[in-house]
Amino acid sequence: MLEIKNVTKIFNKELSADERRVALDNVSITINDGDFITVIGGNGSGKSTLMNSISGVFPLDAGEILIDGVDMTHMPEYERAKFLGRVFQDPHMGTCGNMSILENLELAKRRGKKRGLRWGFTKEDEEKYVELLKGLDLGLETRLSQKVGLLSGGQRQAVTLLMATLITPKLLLLDEHTAALDPKTAKTVLTLTNEIVTKENITTLMITHNMNDAIKYGNRLIMLDHGHVILDIAGEEKKNLTIKDLLKLFEDSSVEASDSLLLNK
Amino acid sequence: MQILESINIFLAVNIADLALTGVKIGLIMAIMTLGVHISYRILDAADLSIEGIFPLGACVAGILIYYNVPAILATLIACVAGALGGIVTGLLHTKLKIPMILSGIITMTGLYSINLALLGLSDKNVITMKSMTFGFKNGLFGKFRELIIGLGLDNSAATTISTLVVSALWLGIVFLIMYYFFGTEVGMAIRATGNNDKMARAEGINTNKMILLGLMISNALIALAGALFSQNGGTSNVDSGRGMIVVGLAAIIIGEAIFGRKTYKLQLISIITGTIIYYLLRQVAIELNVVEFLDLVSAILIVIILAVPLIKKASLSKKGGLKNARN
Ligand SMILES: Nc1ncnc2c1ncn2[C@@H]1O[C@H](COP(=O)(O)OP(=O)(O)O)[C@@H](O)[C@H]1O
Ligand SMILES: [Mg+2]
Picture (cartoon, each protein chain N blue to C red):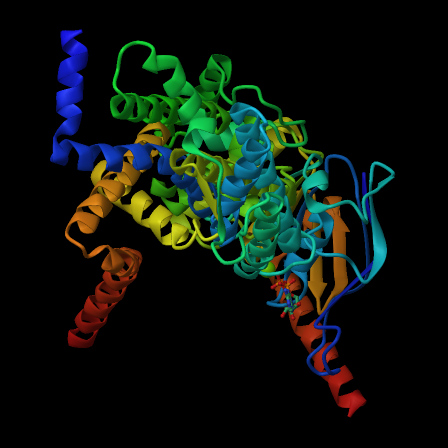
C-alpha cells in the first residue's frame, strides 16, 4: 500500500559534518493494507522524521514514497493530505483553537476535496457529528459551537482523532499523540484510537514512547535507531515479544552505536 | 416640506455637524478596517502595504473619474487594483519567502511611485502637491447628490445625506459578503490557514493559495475605502494612507473592547462601530486642536492593549514562582 524506498533525510545539510543530522539513513519500509504498526525508538532516532517524510512536510534528500503505486515523493503536503489522517504530539497542532468543534469537523470533512463557495455547514453533518462525539463519551456532543481552544488536551486529541478518521484515510499517522496527556487521559485516547482503527480497519502507523503500548497494540512493530530500522517484526513473532526483548535490543543498539563511534576515532 | 426644513436646521447645528463628519468618514473607513481585520486577525499576517494600497484605490479611482469613466466603474476598478496589490505582497511572501512585514513594506514603497505616476496621467502638476483634484460632483457621492437634490433638499443637506447613504450602502454590501464568504468552504479554509497553518495543510488546504486569496480580498477592501474616501473629498492624494495601519488596529481594538469577539457577526459589527467611534474621537481631537497627538495616543493604546496579555501571563508565572519558592 505505502512503499518507502531508500529514503534519506539530512537536516542542516549546509553545516559542518558534526552539526549535520542524518535523521533517516536509507530507510525502506513497505506498509501493507490493514497494517497497524507501532513505531518505537529513542529520542532523535528519526520517528517523527519518518512520519513527516510520509506527509511531505519537507523535501527528501534521497529515495521515494509511493502510495498504491502512485509516486508522491514530490507531491506538496496539502495534496497528500487526501490520503492521510494525522494526529500530532502537541494537542494544539491538529485543531484550530479559534474555531468551533463544528467548524473543525467541517474542515476535516473536506480534506482532499475541492473547496468552493458553498456554505460550509449542513444540518445532516451536524447531526452526524453529534452522534460521533457521543461515541467519544467526553460530553462534547453538547459543545459543538464552542471554540476548540476551550477544550482540554485530551479532548482536543480525541477531536483531532475524529477529524483524522472522519473520512477514512488510506493511512493514519499518529506521532506520540498521547505523550502530552496525563496517564489516565492518555489511556482513554489510546483505547479510543484502538477502537477506531480496528473497527474501520484503518492502516495505521503509530509512534509511541511507551514499550508496553507498542507491544500491546497493532500487528507489527518497527524500531528505529539513529535513522535505521533495526527491528521490523509482525504476527506471532510480535505477539511473543516482551519488554525484556525490547530493552535488550535498545541496549545492543546503543552499544553498537558507541562501538562505531570508537571505531571512527 | 416641513420635514426637509427641520432636517436643514438640524444639520446646521455645530455639534451634530461634528458627529456627522465623524460618522461619514467612519462609515467609509470601516471598509478599510474590515480589510485590515482580514489580514491582521483572520490571516494573522501583518500586512503593511495598506499605506500604499489605500492611496492606490484613491489614485486609480481619481484618475479614471478625471477621464470621465463612470464613478461606479472607477470604484470597482480601484478594488481590482487593490486585489492585484495584495497578490504582489502575497507572492513576495509565499513564493520568494520574504517575511510578511517586509513584503508589505516593499509593495507599499513601490506603490508610492505608481500612485504618483497614476496622478501624473492627469494634466495637473502633481509632483509638488502630491494630489490631484477631480471634483466631488464627479464622484459617486456627487452623482447621488444630483439624484436627490431634485427632492428639494438644500445643497449641504443633500451632500451629507448622499455621503451617508452611499457609504452605508457599500459598507452594507461588504458586511454581507464578508459574513457569507467566511462561512463558506473556501472562507473557512482561509480562517484555518491564519489560525493554524500546519493543521490547515494536514486537512488538505493549500495554505499559500489561501494567504494569497485572503490578501487579495483584504487589499481590495482597503482600496475600495481609498476610492470612496477620495470621492468624498473630490481629491486623490498619494499620502492619504499615512498612519492607516494604526487607525485600523485602533478601531479594531476599540470595537473588540466594547463588543468582544464572541461570534463572527458581532466581530464584524464591533469593527464597524469601533471605526466610527475612532473617527468621532478624531473629530473631537480636531475641534480641540490636538489632532496631531491622536496618532501617538492610538499607537500607545495599541501597545498597551497588545501588551496586556503578556503582562498578565508574566505576573501569573511570577506568582507561581513565588508560591513555589515558599513551599
Ligand atoms: N527541523 C529539524 N531541523 C534540524 N534537525 C532536526 C529537525 N527535525 C529533526 N531533526 C533532527 O533529526 C533527528 C531525528 O529527529 P526526530 O525524527 O524528531 O526524532 P524522534 O521523533 O525519533 O525523537 C534528531 O537528531 C533531530 O535533532
Ligand atoms: Mg518525535
